Length: 251
Image 1: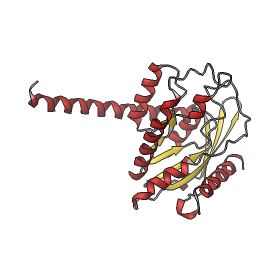
Image 2 (image 1 turned 90 degrees about the vertical axis):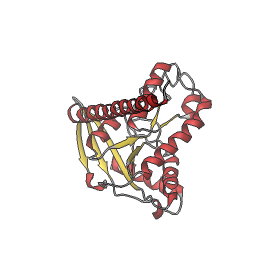
Image 3 (image 1 turned 120 degrees about the vertical axis):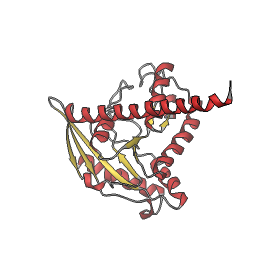
Image 4 (image 1 turned 180 degrees about the vertical axis):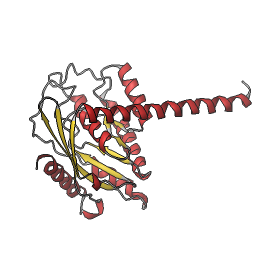
């Protein structure tokens, strides 16, 4: 093939990929916003705690596998990305589609190794399309992607509990007010992002409280921003975040 023809082809491919990415972002974020506005009754408190620009990490309770993300995407006034776990995908087709979608949206993807180790009693068939030996590779890519977003002064949402109370993949359900211990990875991502000497991450704790009558009612609360430098250790930051999120969710 003539080399002079390769560049136009490459340009056309990149242009098409860019259009597809923008359409994907617009569609997903629009659907989430509409869903949060019309399918759920949402009360928001403390929205002014979220900075209008700069690196911001939202650290939230994880109650519902779908609603949590929709509510936050629909009500936060700036675009946020979500760190997501895709080990619930049960076929190669769904795996490929979800990975393509997350890539288009710029959402980092990881796998939960304990989920892949678990038995068939807790998860419906345990038919994940992923294997345990893929976890480390996905974790590296997820951390790299999350750090890149923060260093680009973007917004990122993380659920440090790792599992929601209402989980589409699980046959069991936790108690309404139960709360899983926060995983330390949320603080480690902030630490790595700030190693460049320029990035300063604002960490905003987020509480979610649900009630169901005729339709779901959600109270969304944002707490006072925190910074890594204000805590003596990683564990101290994680503990403070867990306490704040619990207080915002149940207080």
